[in-house]
Length: 484
Image (cartoon, rainbow, N blue to C red):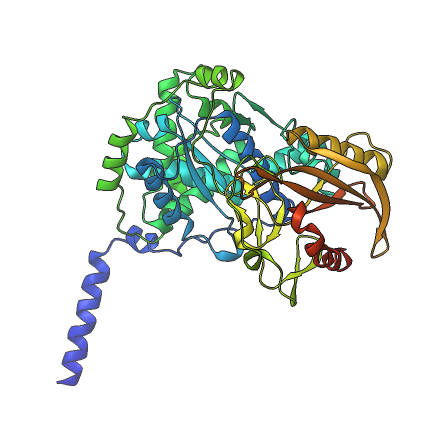
C-alpha cells in the first residue's frame, strides 16, 4: 500500500511537470534586486544641492500645495514606490505637482520629484503614472544629474561642496545661477544621456515590479509620447529624456525571467485624482516663464524650510523665555563633515536651502527663524582670501534680507586652530513685541575656510533683547565646532 501511494504521488508530480511547459519553469526565476548605485558625491551634498534647486523651483513655477487632493494622491503613489527601495540605498524622496499643461516630470538631486498636471492627464492608468515616477526616482537613485554635472564641470566638483554649487553663494539667500544645467523658465534643465535613460528604465522596472505594477506600462507610456511627437518637437519630457531605443522590447527582455506575479495596474484613486487634475488651473511652459518674469508666481504653500534668509518674511508672536532658552546639558551632532555640540532641549534639522538648523521648537515657524544656529557652506567666486570670501558672503546675505545692516567690520578669530572671521548683522526679528512691532534681531556670523577654499559659516540668531543671555551658549557651541 505504501509503495502504491508513493507511486501515485510520483505520477501526479510527473503529470504536473508535463502539463507545465518548460518556458513556464524558466520564467520562475530569481526576483530582481536593485543594484548598488554607489555614491557619485557625498550624500548630504547631493541633498543640499537638490534643496537649493527646489527652493528656486518654488520661486519660478506654480506648484500645487500639499493639501491638494491631486498632490496627496501623487505623494501616496510615490510612497508606495519608495517603500520597496532598500533603506541603505534610499533617498529622502518628495513628490510635488506642477500646474503645467505640458507632459513632463523631473527629478532633482537628493530626492525631490516634480510631476506636471499634464502628465497625470496623459496617463491612461495608475501603472503608467507609476512608471513615470519610478523612472524619475531611478534618476535620483543612480545619481544621474550629479554625474552629468561632473562631466560638464570637471572632476574637482566634489571637493567639499566645491564647484558643484556653481555660482550658488550663500545658503541663506543664495540662488541658482549654474549647476551644470540651469533654471530656465522655472525648469531645471538637465539633459540625460541615452545610457542614463536605459538605466532609469531598468531600475524603474524593478521598482514597479516590486510595488506590484507591470513594468511594461512604463515603456508603453514613453512610447506613446514618442508617437505623439511625430519624430519632432513633442513633449518636453522627450527633449530632456532621449529615447534609448526600443523601450518596450528592452523592458520585456528584462522582466521575462522574473517570477510571475499578480499586478494591480489601476485603482479608483487614480481615476478620482485624474478627474480632479482636469479641474486644476494649469499653464503652458511659456505662460509660466512669463509669470515668473513678471513676479506673478505666488505659491501659497511651500515645503517646510524653503526660505530666503535667517530672518525670513514670516512673523511670530512673542515667545516665552522658558520655551527657547537652552538647557545646561549638551549633546553632539557629527555628520556631513562637521561636528558640534548643541543644547539637548533643542532640535536639529536640515533646511530646504541645505543649511543645518539647531534651534528650540518654539523659536522656529514655517518661513521664520527667531532663535537658533544655522550652519552652511558656500564656494566663493574669485576670492583669494578669507576676507574676500567673507565680504562676498555678507553682501549676499544682506542683499537677500531687506533692511539688514552690518554692524562693524569683520574681526579675526580662531576656532579650534582654524582662522576665521566674526561680524554682527542687525535686522528685524520675526518676533513681534508687546506693541505689535517687530523686535530687532542680532545675527552673529562666523566664517571659516577649508584648505580647498570652501567657506563654512555659522549664523547665531536671537532677538537683540535675548542675545546676551544666549551668547554663552553660542560661544560654547562655537568652541565645540570642528570641520572633519
